Length: 176
Image 1 (cartoon, rainbow, N blue to C red):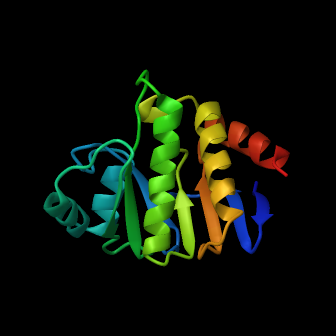
Image 2: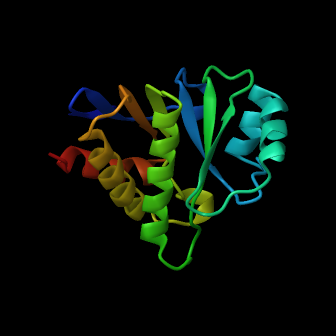
């Protein structure tokens, strides 16, 4: 199932795809402050992309909540990875921190001339942010960005879990 909306010349598309296998200019990895790739998607990045991504992150060191840093994507199809450090479950000001993190990702994408960008449902799953809250904040922030001048041509939200797909789909369909 694909749901999409067009904002000016940019298409925002909800897809059920493995973000680490997408052929995009950059995809977003929801990172920890220590910038260690860890398990889950982080492990997929290491296994499929090689050790170079973590080596680049080790040179950067750390990042704070609300920040985003860019590395290459190693051997993956994507050219780059934007590592976004966002809030976690029961953290104060979750919505404002998630919005700040999403804005930081979009700024990094623009700075690095990304035209095709893929997001996961930011903070959903392991980090404990409710899928509906993630959908509300992300879609509002991304759509506001796309209504202005942007170099982005396609933005994907990769929601493989039905618990993420449902709220993202409903909110994206309801957008004007």
